[in-house]
Structures are given as structure tokens and as C-alpha cells.
Image (cartoon, rainbow, N blue to C red; front, side, top):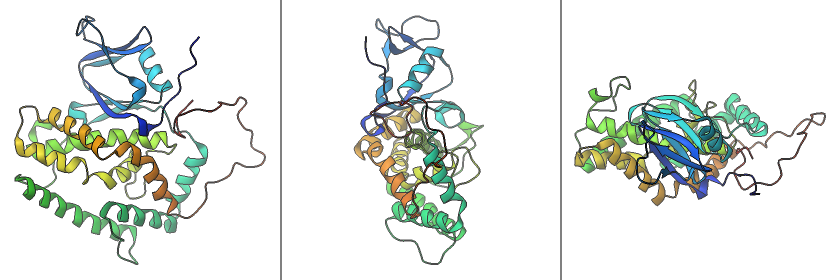
Length: 308
């Protein structure tokens, strides 16, 4: 008998796969995609190496069997149900997270204003490559960041020869947005998907943010912003400048290549730990009178947040 499936680390996986208009099932132990009518797309079923992917984005027209969802959870792969081009999130199956010590650690850093400021300053330094101005509040740093972000959009638009009138799009009316904004939305959706997979794999809560708050993915946005202008934003402007017939697909391919070139999946979890370590507190220990697990999960190859 084969040993039970175990997750592999995020850093050893490919980043993201989009599936549109297909039925996802498990056939002979393999994670496969079939067309809507149940007939094979090709003479051989389209296989997805589910254990080697960080995130699978399920677009309109997809259906997922119970066996497929269970297999994805078992190997620690995030399934995300999204709208057109991945810009509207409907639901997500979380294969990781749920590490009490890390969740309490994250919550303590977010709740203490002094500790939160230290974390925010570290995020600023990692994003812009320089220390933020001294004696600034989180709100002031957010304002400074906003000015720099808008300026960076303008500079990238000029670099790639794209007409830019500001970041503006309506997720409920996708076709109304101009081409640069559609490309940016598709690109950031891909980045958010792989970042959420990494946050969960590291054992932290996507909702407990430091700069962003009040959203289910606040911490995902915080972490993704560190890499946004290094990876997906230049790729989006480059695609917008070429005006391809299918810009959303072109953006996805460009983002996939950019994630690989920048070795993004190898960096996210260590960077999360570095950011939170700026708070200079230790993770909480379990109370002496607490009851531990009844059965040991044993050793596993995955990241801390993966359920083995």
C-alpha cells in the first residue's frame, strides 16, 4: 500500500493554474479536468499535478467533485472560486492555516499599536528598499505609501507607453474599465492567489492585516504589496502596451513567468516571518495545563500551516 499523501513546501511548487469551463474530478487517483459535457477534452484527460501547484483558480463554468476538493485539501493546494479573469472572489477552500501559536502571535502584533507600527515600518522598508521616515504613525505611512504608489503607476505607464488616467475599475462591470486597468486587475488577482496560498501554508490568518484591515484578505494584501511593483504591475503594463486579442490570458502567462523568474514562492514565507519578527516578540507558548493532540501527526514535508 502506498503511504498517505503529504503536502510539499510551497517553495517547491509551481505558482498558479487557471481552470475555465471544465469539470474537475479524481480519476484513478489523478486530479483531472473534463469538459462540461463529460467528454474528454483530448484523447487523454487533462491532468493537473495538484500537489505541485500552490493555487488553482476556478473560473465561471467550472464544477468540482467532492473527491477533487478533498484531494486538493489533503495535498495543501488552495482552491479559489473566482469571477471573470479572477477579479471577483466568491469562495476559497483553505488547505492550511489553523496554527494556534502563529494565529495568536499574529493577533498580538496586530492588536498592540506599538508592535503593529514596527511591522508596518518593516513592510514599508521591504517594499521600497529604504527605511520609512521616523516618528510617523501607521496612518501617515499609509499616506506616504499612497503617494509613492500613484507616482510609480505613472512612471511605469510612461516607460511602456501606456495612456494612464489612474487606477479605476468596477469589478461588477469588467468591460467598462480601460485596458491597463483590466490588465492590472487580472495581474493582481494572480498575485493575491499565490500569496494567500503562502499565508495559509505558513500558518497565519489571511484576514488579520496590519496596513489593510477589515477585509477577509487584509494580510494577503499587505504581503502581496511587497512584491506588486517588482512583479505583476510591470508585466500588466507591458501586456497593455501590446494590446493583445486576449489580454487576460496574456497577463496570466506573463505573471506565471514573472513568479518563476523572481522565485517568488521561495521568498514569500521567509519574508512573512521576517516582517512579523520586526515586532520583536516571541510566539506564545501553550499554557502548561492545556491538552495536546491525542495523536501525533508525525513528521511531514510541508510548511507549518499545512494539515498533514
